[in-house]
Length: 316
Image 1: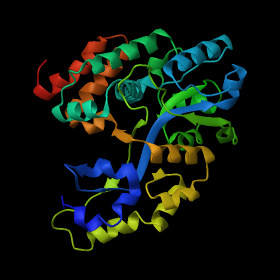
Image 2 (image 1 turned 60 degrees about the vertical axis):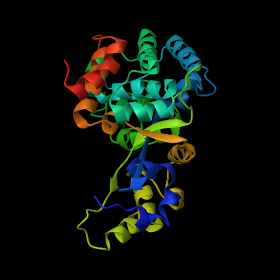
Image 3 (image 1 turned 90 degrees about the horizontal axis):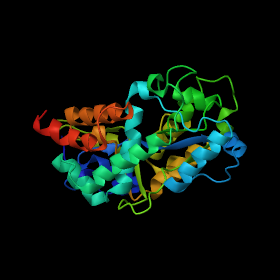
């Protein structure tokens, strides 16, 4: 990989936190092309039915809203646990709320989750599951395939919310006959946790990007500058493919809720890449499997954190 640091130094700063995910030891080895941010998509009409006037800011608020939605006869949260990866969003977010950013970075680099905060993340997931927030039969529900998927349930008003990425509205469009569904959607970031050491400004996300090889022609860095320029990024935003990384393209986001998500991403103090991507492939997969098994009633909160060290060292 070509060290792009000097070649992009004049413009990479305009991309904000999104560029940090493509750095190693302070050197830029790639540039982001689009950005993805995970948060809660919710039905404003179903929140109103349950007399919820504002989205929850804390986990205490979130649990109270689950009770209100249940009392109103509304399924609080949809999840596509058949695909397993949506389960990880919850544990990942609990982790960045319970662990400081420094601890997260150090633990990921060491591939060892031995700080007590990781156990707290597992305990938080235990508490969430105890609230029974998901739809009946959620373990067999796909995330994005068909009207009966978790995304389809929210799109069709069968559940109040889902923790998913900014791609959610685009996914929902093919899953419902309601052409006005987007106007009924709202968005809020993952709630804060009282007493957690994590920075509430940290968000979970990811995205796509490009690099140059060491044998690439000299024009390669210029091409990367071009695809991150306002012209290309505006086309990306208008197409609804993902959130642009160039702030000059934000005006092309047609959905006002997506613009809200974009604005939130720009204010984020740190964007934590999904743990299964931040870790080596086999270790990240082991973590996702451990989380999915735990959500399905197998394993313990401690076993989730332990799965990373075991996969990294080859221990059983």
